[in-house]
Image 1 (cartoon, rainbow, N blue to C red):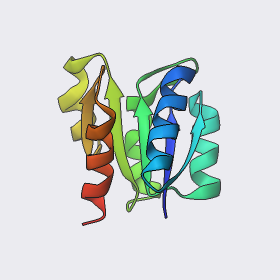
Image 2 (tube, rainbow, N blue to C red):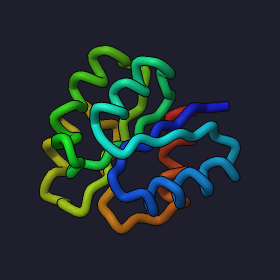
Image 3 (cartoon, rainbow, N blue to C red):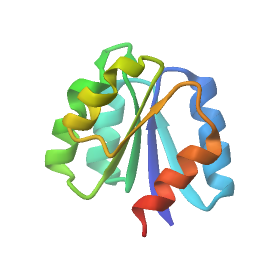
Length: 116
């Protein structure tokens, strides 16, 4: 099963994504800040990271290039209500940018896209 890590400070989003993705046969964990998320990436090497931008301890967009350089095979999906960040996120190495609010099925399709 593919491993997915969600890094988002909104627990409702984490729980909703986790429940949906687990029903679609993904192993899912989540972290509610960057420090926890980066530690989880080091320990578990997820196949996909769903990364929010505005987190309590920093901006997710500033860690995309670190994640991709340390784990080039890990897919990074940036999620943010700030659509103006799309080109910057993609330039830093995000595989996809998904504006909030999003459809759960869209996230699932992007993760499946990575396994093709």
